Length: 515
Image (cartoon, helix red, strand yellow):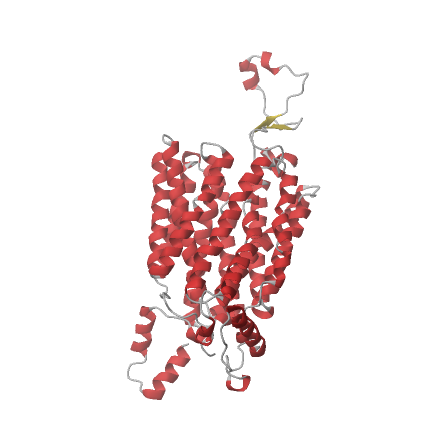
């Protein structure tokens, strides 16, 4: 495949066309950012106790007599605190006491929906295009956010919540891939490391404020559908990825799109942008299994899967563990979201100036150490504990921002969306286990508060260890084919050692066989 980035140099990197794509794609990211914390606020579990009938007079019973009575379930239902919420899924369907196991299960179902969405959207996007999958995901978010508000029972809510999760991460991944493929050079780094994450974080910040004003979970669900509906007119402003069109052999469509972009930028396009079909190699047919087909791509894929798993488990584990901290629930989550802005800004600065591996390792180590030090301050210093949590979130999220860019640069165009979606699948496996971190603390009472934070710190350290063995992509062009994927220095030395003694054509053939 010819060098795409060389072929489109005539467009420049930051003309009117690129600026329009930058801002429009950022706007399409609002629905998925606004929905992500729904798993926290819709499923909030307020303080509660057994409902005491008006004719009861337990206060006059001797304390010794009450303590000797056999305990039983709340026959008259429960009374829930309305300090923060008028109603939630937990309070409406009584998911407490013997039904408490349904709380983490509902969160698990949401993230399993995200896992399924990653797998399905990746395959569809690489086969049928980025744009249809993007707006299909946005439509799913709006339709099922509205449908969730009318769920008559917990089983129905769970099924609808699964579909909501399916659209959430698929939307983010496709926006990322589309922006990374249309934009080139510094504008691509600006979009993937700062623009999209900033808008995503800002959208997340809106939900705690909305939940503070709208205390009913059904009304909140309906409001969550609004950003997706507002994105419908953007269909006419978002083009298909010319890079994807080229990878599928649709050269005429790709050229037409780029010539239109040249008119917008007021530059002259060359007579021939891409080689004609006869001179171009046939488009590759790839599938999910190609991520594991050769040793070269398999080593990269497996490491990325584990890194995304550990980072996502840390990210969402932080969110779920916030309920154990002192202070106002809405303020805590707002602060936890606000810290994402400087984290993404730091990841953008690192992406501009520093190697990917060094940036990821530095940020992740910072997050891991902060989370491990929480155990020193948890009981006696609530302010210091909150500061360490925010510092841990900063490190984890800045590392997460780097790994998004890193994964996109490691993955070739022919299978980039599938690769990104497969990584997002493993991130959803990590987020699926995160609600059970608190349950793990309940099991080991002596470590009830500390165990979740220790686990999160260890997971961040795991990501650091795995990143050491990945190849560097800093200031390298995006690979378009699997053969163009970068390799580690260790693998390159091994190839050279294995090919030692082979000369000329034999050495080249040996290297092709290794690929």
